[in-house]
Length: 454
Image 1 (cartoon, helix red, strand yellow):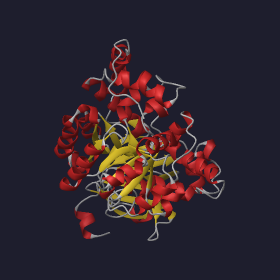
Image 2 (cartoon, rainbow, N blue to C red; image 1 turned 180 degrees about the horizontal axis):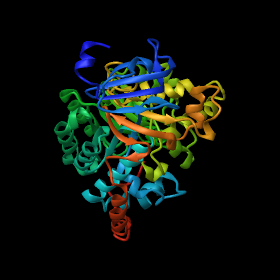
Image 3 (tube, one colour; image 1 turned 120 degrees about the vertical axis):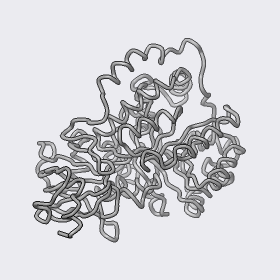
């Protein structure tokens, strides 16, 4: 024990757990009967349980029988869309957008967004998600929810070219106003919607603003094969080639979905000047019956991180990144025709370090190691569905569930302990949201916030 440890108690000590670790080659490992010492919101030490016996700390967690993982990261979602969960089912993409989602979103008020964001954050905290990348409207309200509930987030105010210059300016103003807020837990991005709703001039202007202000860009691109084929037919270029010619790939960019990425796009992504990443949300692709999925192996081979995501609950029905991890592994095996891809350890790498890199936080979260922010979840593997444990990585990816998360910690602050949420009053949110739903889901007005027209 160091003198400083005696003089100044740690903020939090988690002891008796098995800790997921990364070695200097980024290989996944596990340290048994371990302890994590947290001070000032960061991991100070990962050591043995015996080494912390008698250590002074503001808070202790006895985590025997549990596994400590870096907090999961939802790399692309639209959190307030939990209010639309189950509203637009069994529809093709165009009808889903034009017939239901975009008419309903024209009704959104700031209070609707706030309540949806609160409910979404509660769901994510309970599922072991400590950080999320959100791309939506009324983002000031979502930032306030993040600040209050204690989560970490990359936030971007979405805009379409149909909104004129004002939409792009609002996206920039939000990003500059909230960058580094909530004690550094909020980072921001510019958030054009997609190449099919944002024209080349706006994309080029966005790229220029991103470079000038040191901001990343978060957008949808090559979401599915139909979008890519429509872009080729109309403009002679793929959506990824649009990003290249407008300068978006010269910025740090997070691309949502990318199931329509073609082989011809890979060299552009590989030599992009900015930090390029892709977020995959496989459950929605299955629901929409898209014929392809995110090419995880091809992207990994060219050094592009692929983070795990859920998209919004209107398409995915949940914000369960645990499920996204398992589905990513299974779907890649099927798509590649090889059961050796994606392994459980590779899936855990995508869920941790690769997801952290995707949201631009690869230097501060994504692993449990000294100096990293203390974003930690404790997973209980004592249930019958997770026993016996022959391969811990496989048990975590393919047997464990989000409901097995017992405790969620962000920046050293406990947001859920023993399944009890500590920062959000869910019943009150559900009550008020239920009262507002009739006005929110009304489509009799015939309006849409945008048209899905490729």
